[in-house]
Length: 170
Image 1: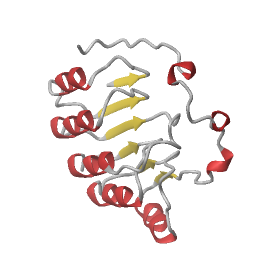
Image 2: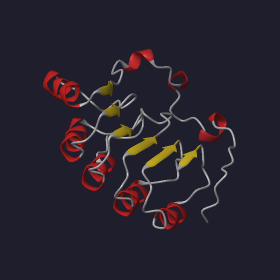
Image 3: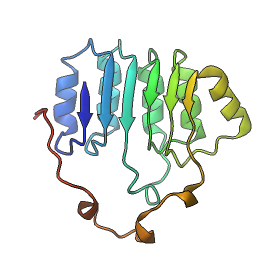
Image 4: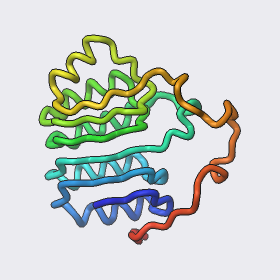
């Protein structure tokens, strides 16, 4: 299943669809800002064969939103068969990353690029490199990122185009 830039999909519609697709092995959910941790949890519980998950977020609000390990804990608790995980732009901390490493022992690839709440001390970085074959580290130097002229009161609609989605889940 692949959903990209689908701003009209609700948790309710996604959850209803996923419950009917227990054989899913690969899911790509990119920049679907309306889907919450509830959708992620139902996906993990309804699709035990899930091996590959891409659940990425846009980083327009990275300087406003606080750290949050809820999604990381849901992944760790419900998706133990994952071999590929891309959570670029997630708000997880080192605690959430450790939960994923412990809860998903089959992981071969992990992308945590643009996860700005990570500190990644040397022992955690070493564990990731030892455990994961294909590991994409975040660039923790946020000064190299452009963030819309330091204006944190921007209108989200000014920066996003209207996208349509091929899927109708409602």
